[in-house]
Picture 1: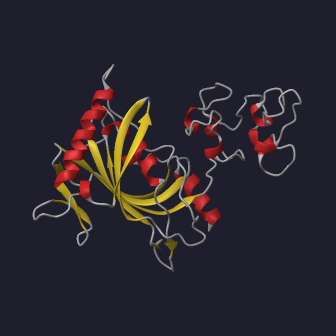
Picture 2: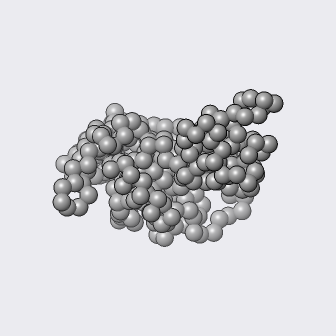
Picture 3: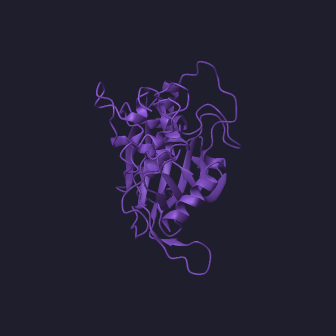
Length: 291
C-alpha cells in the first residue's frame, strides 16, 4: 500500500490543482499586505461570530436561533502564523482529528508531506455570506505546494482507515474539519478563477492518508529534513544557490554528484556521511569539496 501511495503521489504531483495553485491574476505593486492582514482578521472574526456549525447538515450556517457561534465554539482553534514577516491569524474547526489505521501513518503530516484529501471550498463574501462551492475534489497534493493556509492547517489532522473493497477508494475515520483562511494565506491580492483579490476562504476538508517523510526530489533526504537553516521552512534553503530549493534539487551542493550518491556508508541516508576532516559536522551532500 505504501508503494502504491508513492506511485499515485508522484504521478499526480505535477498536476495543478484549482484550489491550491498559485495566483493567476495580477498583483498591485507595493500592496500593503500587513494592513490587509488586519482587515482579514477583523472580517473573519465578524464571520465566525455570526455563523455556527450545524452538525445535522454538516455545514456552516447563519445563527438564527441563539446557536453557539463558531467564534465561541470550543472546537474552533485559533492559530497565529508568520509569513513573509507578516502576522496572520487563521482558524480551523476540528470535527474529528482522525483515527489512522495501518498502513496509514499514525501521526500527523509535516508541512512538507504529501496528503490525500477530500475538500470543497467557498468564498467568504462581505464578512457575512458565502459563495457557492468554487471547487470540490479529492486528490493527492504536497503541502509544500498549496496555499499556506492549507499547509499550516492540515498538519493538525491525521489520516483514517482504507476500507476499499472491490470498489472506489474508500476511507473512514479520517481527520475532518473546516478551515477559515485569511486572504494573505490564500491568494493574497491576486485572483484565481472566481476568487477575487483579498478574499477570505472557507474549506471543508477530510484528511484520509499521507506519505510520511515525503521526498520530493527522491534524493534520499526527506523534504522536511532539507531545512538547513532550521527555521521550519525547507522552501527557503538553497545550498548551491541555483534558485532550486534543496528539497527539489537532486544535487544539493552543486558539486556534480547527485545527493543520493553521496551516501558513503551505503545506508540510504546521505545525512549521516561525513568525509571531510576539516568540516566534520558538514554532511558530504552539502559539501562541495566532497564528491
